Image 1 (cartoon, one colour):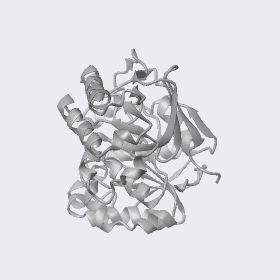
Image 2 (image 1 turned 45 degrees about the vertical axis):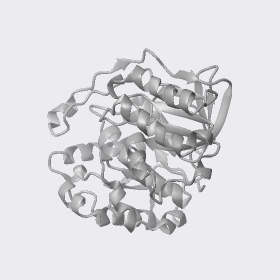
Image 3 (image 1 turned 120 degrees about the horizontal axis):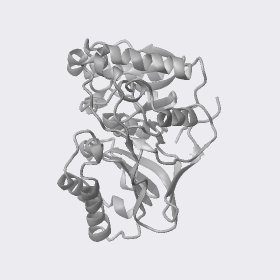
Image 4 (image 1 turned 120 degrees about the vertical axis):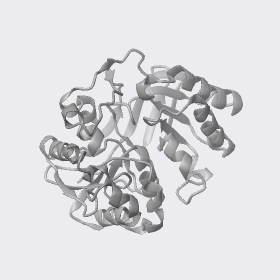
Length: 347
């Protein structure tokens, strides 16, 4: 796997709309501008909008080739050092016919986003490029009132240095509160923060285990089975799989069905560990745990597989960044998670 160069102040980064095009819609454009300003002021980066990224949701829904063109041209542009996703959605898979994997491979740079952007991450993975499951423009960078310190910390640590990332401690607070983005006045209201009462949980497993990171949003991964983006079975060997759920709050039944599909594919026989993000609003918090144990411990007979639960990545704020393809470590005895490599290489 190719590890891209880290960022430094003054670098140009591209913003792209690869799924939902709301960043360019009248009701949401203000939020994009907030996120853009934060990137420039907090991190010293220069934002370049790709030509189609702000054409709005109606246009981009009709033109997946335009979204893919932005992605490809952002990779080709030697002046651009990173690509940040504006937001996820449910439509990225339609870009697949227009993707040139050699363009990604031959122009390595930071690519970041989450949710439906899982599809783009597996495009990068297929091309052999490490990418970053982390903040988007409309959500995290444009967080109401100000960005979360926790999220800022991991952006700086993972993307701006080539030091070992190290231990990722849990956030002391979290929020899943939804305040309608189309009402600009809501952006002046801080979302309600909940004190973290549980911390990381070990559902099963002993000692320490290491593995390369791979994963994403469960609902999106569910759409990818059988496509050219789905990794071959051998690719799952010695991996730490990371999974999280979206704001749609899938039912425990859905989680069970999805996990059974992974079991049928033989993936639980291959991986070294599993880490799971905090569910939205902590809905189904206990029920999800039961399903993971039912399928992995009881049905897959992997009572030895370390499972760490309630982590800060994905749809519940704030979040850290998980780089695909780098070595991570679960310490079951001490309930610790760390990444044993740098997120990037020297500039």
